Image 1 (cartoon, rainbow, N blue to C red):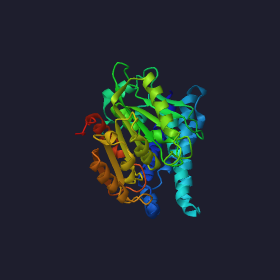
Image 2: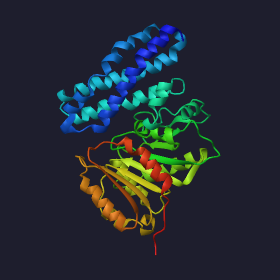
Image 3: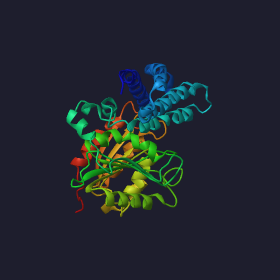
Image 4: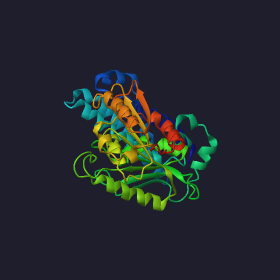
Length: 362
């Protein structure tokens, strides 16, 4: 790169990363009652990005891939902020906010293509306590074949496919924990992948983000999703080395509810469950196999401010599942609404690595 293009990078990348961080803040703290205050707290980080973006128009064709990735990521960020600032004008304000935030994972996906070559981008895709770990950054920059992000019949708008992230540090001789992360209602695995990628990349886990066959998971009625999850898991385990004692089924909202429903089935291959912001009915434990629940590690996370599924559901889940013999860890988050608390992923991975299933049957 020539000095002017290096200068352009210095003008574009920092405001792009700051804007992405602001969108993550909005995604985490989104609450219909506090929307205006939350947007005011974010300020206007996209203004600097909008001002710097035209610099890319003068780049030489030889830098086309780099310029394309930065332009695409920036365009999604700017569109997200534009749509968010129009939310108060929309009849379905909350729905409009969720639609605007769909641009966040699209921007992250575009930017991730530059993680191996641009250290600031690589650091952005690490958990904050490890962003200055030069040893980790060097290893991640030397990617191995069949690692990184791969999509299997999981284009936007498709159903039933899945996306996978395999750490660039992957060694087939070392088994890694697996996280299968289930999106919320009307969501998509390709987007929900980014709720977990930073932590899987930092701490070493194979991440699988499937997409439900229907508009949401088969919480009631005929269940076509559980066999599909089994198919996906078999395909991943045949291709990469997965630790059979550390296979987590996690999920957000409807995905968390389905983690209960599917994960408590007698034949479920998953060793741990981690539902977040999920609905729960105590009758689930009455119909579940007691031998399956006994000793099953379950990590429950729920927000006190959840407006969709009241926190009392999670409290009932803790009582019912603990009473049935499960190893329950319960996290109630005071400032969490009906959103995903990514800041807890590192703790969940530590719990996954440290908590084996124990047999509590007499």
